[in-house]
Image 1 (cartoon, helix red, strand yellow):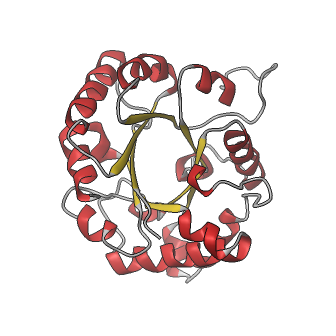
Image 2: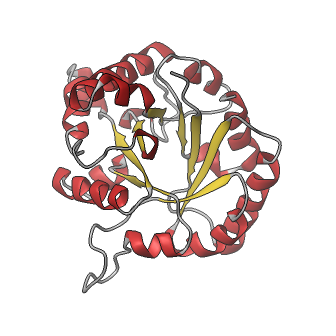
Length: 251
């Protein structure tokens, strides 16, 4: 099964409007010459509209970093999937470690958001991963399995709109990266688990990204692994040249 690699930048809470537009333009310009890799940018809520206008009709997908699970209503400060779709968003993250561990989102809330994002027709990028103390206690696979169980197989039926991002929390923004073998081990476990949750055919078609200090110098090794189908890029996505080098590594 040949899966098209998906490299997405997660800009997190960075850039102002002018910087966001400039970064998007630079990514689009560099991405024109790249084929065979799906490219995306998950941008701050307040710049989804402005960046979306830059990405429209290009080979770079517009994405969001989070969404609330209700379609509308008295939920002050929240953003619905419908609002994101209205601005042209094509994918959305859920369960990012910063949402789980900094914002303190519960597994139940993450699951509701995942359901809402997928049910609305967007591509769901569901993030899973362990903290350092969990890895040291040999709990990595148990943690990842519990986070995967936030998803509802009966409702998620199109493997092309489900992406899993494995992001070891201890490797995010720290400069530490899982070795190629460490990352592959967990990716293979996730694919095997999906085979049990869905079926082997479904699991073979779902892309699993690696997120956790992927940079131009380690991207090729990571993405050459059998079950690593791209990257969810944080810091390196804030500069177009480094982001595009990672995209190139996925070809």
